[in-house]
Structure formats: structure tokens, C-alpha cells
Amino acid sequence: MTIQASPSRSGGGPPIGVERDAVRRASRSLLEEHWDADGGYTVPNPGTYQPQWLWDSAFHALAWGHLGRPDRAWRELRTSLQAQHTDGFVPHMRYPRNFPGLDPVGLWDRSGASTITQPPIYAHAVAHLAGRGSEPERGLLVQARRGVEFLVRERARIDGLVPIVHPWETGCDDSPRWDSWRPPIGDLAAWREEKVALVRSVVHNGAGSAVGGGSFAVGSIGFNALVAFALGELASLLSDGVLAETAAGLVDAIEARWDGETWVDAHSRAGAGTPTLDALLALLVVRDRRQVAAAFDQLRDPHGFAGAYGLRYVRADQPSYEPQGYWRGSAWMPMQYLLLLAARRWGRDELGQAIRATSCAAAFASGWSEHYDPDTGEACGAAPQAWASLAAVIADC
Ligand code: GLC
Image 1 (spheres, rainbow, N blue to C red):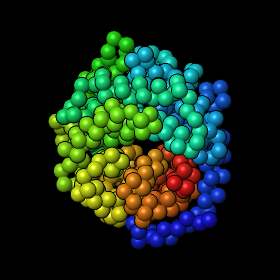
Image 2: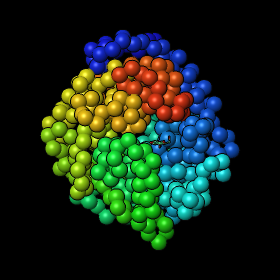
Image 3: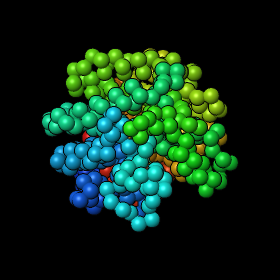
Image 4: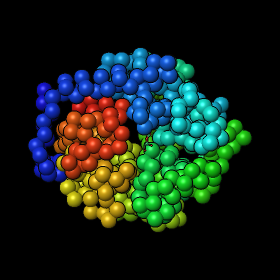
């Protein structure tokens, strides 16, 4: 079967049609090639990203489950939570062994794992796999629950939102929403140094878990939407009213931050309301139909988020938009997947179909790269990157 989208719907550009089976085959071999049997995880990219990353592994698990290997999916979820602290905190990186050229101790002051986290997509992965009839282990469910509960319990809220303590915690490392922490744009070495300095400024509790930002504490809408989504997924899976109530509280806090155009992060510097795609992840959880309609308009707009090869990370009408810039405007497969879930939640079939078609076309056009130019499909970053295998999940969901 061929997946088609009309170019006008997906933002202009070439008509695209890709065989669904070809997407499945290519995704499956990508995962197989990157599978590390000893470490129990899929290496994001063998050259650039060798350790295990938390949200990458959740996306890999979704793809493994979808492509007929729930055993690998569960194994990867288990290893991604292996470095969890006793208070529930889950480090965003795990170093199962030494990697030449990487110095975890120099960066994190310890060897096996990082000291900050990433969005708790693992909860969605567990729920998704369970929904497809693959029974989760009790222990994993408990771990997922404790991981999400840590965030809502241990971090002092900013305007009702769970703060992130470092830009890396969102997974959207160089978002223009962090520009007021960033040295002059263009000076990448200085920005890297600043991000390392921000790691050092993180406040930890007695168990070594990140509870607060020193120089960086932000109520990120994207991150909070994913926390609320995780709580909601676990609440349904476990039929747990307390989790559902906690999610609802976060959703109230997110809805209160709508400025007529987007949901604005909670912090006191400039740039909190830059129109980035991760802020629209609020569509996974909010209820306000006026906000929802205005957000979806931008996702369909060719001058907004809709590129010919996928949803841009930054709206094209923004001065900061760079179609090939790292978290500055290029398209990211995990974002396409999450926005597809939002489109499905709201019955936006046309947008859903556009995301399916553009994502499959972009996977092939970009050589399954880490991210890609949303206007041309050209590869950006590492290639191939294991999470591009999400294209197979996107094609079918
Ligand atoms: C980059 C991305 C981050 C991802 C990591 C590993 O740092 O910004 O989201 O988790 O690479 O793929």
C-alpha cells in the first residue's frame, strides 16, 4: 500500500508516495544494525551517539514492538530504567561500558549514568505495548510510575509546572526558547561550555537526584505536556485516580499559559513564548478547544510549521528559523510521532495523513538521519539514526 499526501496539504513541494512495506523493512534493518546485544539497547548512532539515551530508547521500544519484537522492546525499556535512583529519578544517559573519547566522570562527576533526566516517554511506550497485547512486567510498571512521580513530587513547581534543570532535559537541546542563556548565536563552542556549566549548577538532593536548576530552571511547556501525558497513560493503565488528578493539575497549569498563539514557558527571561513545535505537544493533554484550534491552524500552515517533508521545529515565519539548524527549525522524527498522536486525539485526519506521508518520504530522502530539512528532506546530523525507525510506527498509526 502506498501512503499519499497532497502537496498542498503538507506545505508545498513534491508529491510523495512511499510503500509502507518498504518503510517497515528499512526500519527493521536499521534497528537490527544498531542493536547492542550486550548493552540491551539500540545504539542511536554508532559514530556520534554511542551510550543509551532515555527518550531514544522509548522511541526504539515503540518501533521494536511495532515491528514484531516486543522482547527487544521490553529489554530496551528495562535497561533504559536500569540506572534509576531509589527515589525514582531516572538519569537520561546510561554508559553501560567505557566509550573511547567520552568522559562521563568529567561531565557528570560519576561514571555509569548522567545526573539529569529526559521526557518520560517510557510511560507511553509501556502503555502502547500493553495496548497491543504485550503484558508489561509488574516491576517495570512500578519503575515507570516512580520515575514520573519523582518529577511531580520532588521538583518545586514554577507556576504549577515541573521545572527542567537543564536544556538537555527536554531533548530539544538548542531550542530558541533557551536563547537568553546562550552566548552569541554562532559561537557553538561557547554554548557547549555554557551547557557544561549549567550541568555543574544543577541542584541535587541527598540521593544525587536532580531537583532544581541553579542558573537554569524553566517550566517548559513541552516537557510538562509529556509529563502530564505520561501520568495520563499510567492512570489509564493502572486505573489510578490519583495519577489522573495529578495530570489534570498540570494540564490546568499548561492551559493558563496560552498567549493567543502558543503556550509560554514559565521563566523570567526573554524567548519563553517563541513558537516551537515542542510547545504544541500541549495538544496531547489540554482540553481548551479554542487553544487547540489555534494551535492546529499553525500545524497546517505552510508559512508556519508545515514543511513539504514534515513539521518544522520552529515556525518558518520566525527570524530564528533555520531549516537545517539543530533544534532551530529542522524536522525530528520523534516530534512527528508525538504530533501524530495529538492529531489522532483530536480527530485531525488530514494532518495525521500528512504526517504519515511526509515522515515516510523524509526517512528515505534523508537516509534515516537524526533530523532533516523540512523543506527538502535533506539529511541533518547523524545518519542513520535509530529513532528514524519510528517512521514505521507513524506509517501504521
Ligand atoms: C541529541 C538530541 C537528543 C537525543 C540525543 C541522542 O542530543 O538533542 O534529543 O536524545 O541526541 O540521540
